[in-house]
Each structure stands twice: as C-alpha cells, then as structure tokens.
Image (tube, rainbow, N blue to C red):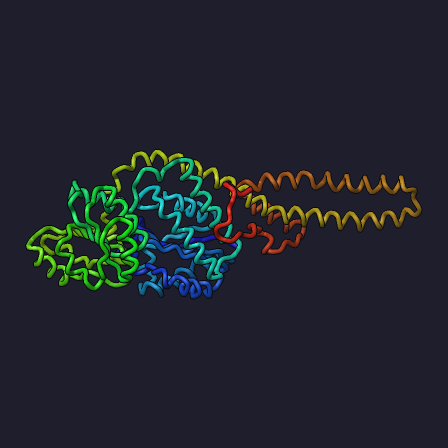
Length: 444
C-alpha cells in the first residue's frame, strides 16, 4: 500500500484552470464516492481550497493509482490529458508524506504559514472519513500530518504574524483607501472567509459593514457580530451605489457580478470609484468588470502582490518549521521502516525455530534414551547455534531499515530464506484512529 498525491495549486496553475477543478462542499461526497470506484485506490482524500486541488490516495499500484486519479481529473475538468498534464504534479511514497506535512504547515500556501489550511486539511480528512473512503494508510497519514501542522504553529508562532487571504484582502483595500474610517464595505457571502474578512475590516477601522448572502439568516448572523447591516441578496443593487469597497467570497458556481450589472451600478454612482476584491474560487466577479471606468478589480491571484508585507517574520519562523518537518519525517521513516522489517524478522525466527525443532526431534530419536541433563544440553546447544546464526542478519536488517535500501534488503532476505510474509502485513501502517482523536507529536 503506497501513499500518493496528484494535484495542482497556485504554484502550477492559473486561476482559470483551478476554477475547472474546484469542488464545492456540496459535491465532495459524490466526488469521493465516484473516485474510490477507480482501480487500485484503497483510500482517498480530496483537498479542495481556493488555491489548490489535491487528491491524496493509498494505492496498491503507484502507476495505476496515479493514472486513475488523473483520468478522474480529466473527466472532471473537461480538459484533455495533454492540456491538464501541463499543470498537474505528482508525489509518491515519502515525498507525498513530506508534501502534505508542508501543506498542512502552511509552507506551500500563497500566504506563508497561513492558518486556514490546517482546518481545511482537517475538514477534507473528516469528509473522507465520514464518506467511508479512507483506510488505515490514509488515517495515519493525515492524523500525523495534522499533528505536525499543530506542532509547527505552536513552536514557531508563525501564525501570530497576521497574514492570510482575508487579511491580505483588507491590506489591499487599505492600499486604495489608507483610512478605512468612514468607508462603507459590502461583503458578499457569509462563510468563514467572509467572517475573517469582516473581522479584519472592523479591526482596521471600517465604520459601516454590509453583508449580503443568499441565506438572509446567515447574513443577519454575520452582520450582528460586527454591528453591521444585513442586505437581502436580491436587493443588494440598491446598496451598491453607496459602498466604497466590495469583497466577494460566496460559494456560487456562477458569476455574481456581470459587466452589464456593474455598468448600471457605476452610472448611478456618478463616477465615484469602486474597489472590488474577489477572493472566491470559482470567481464571483466576471473579469471584464475590471475594465469598467471607475472600477478597480482584484481577484485572488492579485493578492500575491500584497503578501510580501509582514512576511519577514514568517520566513524566519518557517526556517524553524522546516526543521520540525524534517525531524518528524525522520521519526516517521524510522517508525515505518522498522515496522516493515518486523514481519520478516518474525518469519525468519519462525522458520529457524521450525527447522531446529525438526532436526532436534530426529537427533534425539537417533540418540535413544538420554538423561534430562543430556537432553537439556543438546537443546541448549541447538538454541545457541540458531541464535548466533540469526543475530547478525537480524541486527543488520534493523540497521538497514533506516536507509533507502531497507525495503530492498528485507525482500532479499525473504527470497533467500523463502519466507512467507503477507502483503497486508508488509505495509504495517498502524490502524488509524477516528478524526479528532488526540495523537502524539510523533509516531514511535
């Protein structure tokens, strides 16, 4: 059983490609059930965020498993293999483990060390577990990754330097309007991203916050937390004439603001400037809106230009965090490789014990009647010979387990002594716990 990941992110693919592979929360369960039916996939997790789509899997065959995931993504995106392969990346075995450790620690994010990814990975794992599509490889893989992510943040304090997608959106607004006091902001959407954005806006001095959402009750709830006003989704145009900044983060799969709608709004504003920051994936605002006179439009990819601020402290913390990841990888490798050789050592001892007992029985039968003392001496001699013969290969095999050749030496020993070791036992990933159960800082 081998861990693999196939995916794309803001590092490898532009927004228009990532949009084609965005999985709304309402579709995750169906997608998981569809994917797990593909060949060679025994456990899966789909991680879908604004900046990445990654599928993690435990597969019985790396090549077949990767091909199955890619086929699923081709069909999902509507792109050809040649088109999509330009943006996809793959990680296998321990590089897949290291990649997830980096992702969950925020080291692969647009905003270095951002906090949201930890919760997003946890949610992705819990969704997969609830859907019944994980197995013990995936369980231990993700549980330890989440533990690593928590340890990195606890020990480095990297997330105490306030930079996130939502915070960066506010920073971008402050570049346009250095003083947010007296400015009116409308937030489209009432999810976590909208909540975090509103929180940062109020902290930055925004005096009036309007919240519009398809669910009016959720808009009321979010607006109440910040002494703002809820606006019914079908009535927002009546308020857009008075706002200075729109921050859009809905879960819509279609554009919320189209050019003709915004043109009408701008005519009513009599030329007053409007800043729109679209942090939704798929995008809420049609890209042509940005060409309308008086409108400044930024989408999530534009935020990268703002991210450079406040990164120095995070970069310093990231150096320490990378050391933690490598430390945890060493513990993980040592643990997993040691487990891999245990079944072989057990099988070797059992084979030696079987041979010893057969030969002892034959020898004792030929020797005839012996005193208890004589029989004990012969048995002791046989045990000593077996133990001496096995000591060096077992000791060396344990040492080789910590090297890249560990699996090779284990298989050679199995073949030399014709040992029977079950395939399921060979992997020996520990049985995973349910999501939410506490894990130690490292596997031992």
